Length: 215
Image 1 (cartoon, rainbow, N blue to C red):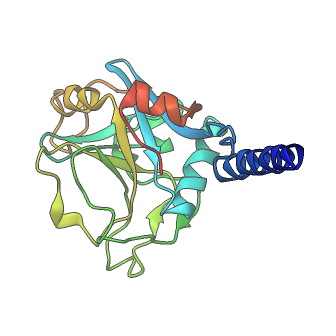
Image 2: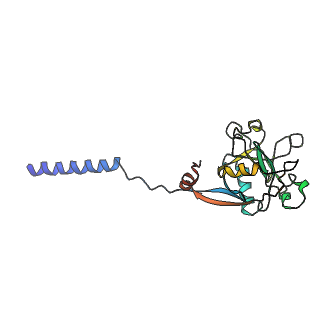
Image 3: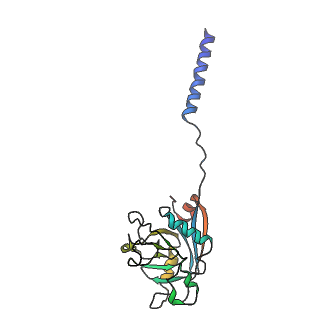
C-alpha cells in the first residue's frame, strides 16, 4: 500500500512540474531588423535622414535616386534663414545659376500629403513642386527637396506639400547652410554640393546613435 501511495505521489509531482513548464515556456530570441536611411554629406557636416514609410512613393523614389548617385554633385541652390534650405536639382551641377530650381529627373511623384500626421516642423523634409496654377494635383518634383530650418516650423505649408522625411542627426548642418551669404534669388554665393548615399542601420543602432525609434 505504501508503495502504491509513493508511486502516485511521484506521478503527481512529475505532472505538476510538466504543467509549470507549459505555463512558462522559454521566450524565442528576437532578431534586430535593418532599416535604410539617407546620408547627406556636405562641406559643413553630414546629416542623416529617415524616410517616412507613410509616404511609400516618395520613399522608394528617393532611395532609388540615391542608389544611382543621382544627387551627387547637386547643390543646395536656395537658402532662406528661419525657413528652409532646398536642393536636389540636377541643373545646379552646371555653371548656369539662372536654371536652378527648374530641373528634375523628368517625372513627378503623386502627392502623399497628410497634414494630420506629417507636418512641417524643424528638420522635416518636404518635396518641392510647381505651384497650384500649373500643378493642381500638387504632384511633387521628382528630386528637389527642402529641409525646414525654422525652430517653430513652417506650419503654413501644412497640407500643401508632401512631407516625406526627417533629419534625425545633423540638424546643425542646416543651421550652418541657412546663414551663408547669398544673392537676391536666395542662391548661395558659393556652391554647397552634396553627396547622398543609402546606409543601413539596425533599429538598435538608430536608438543608440541617433536616439530615434524606427516605426
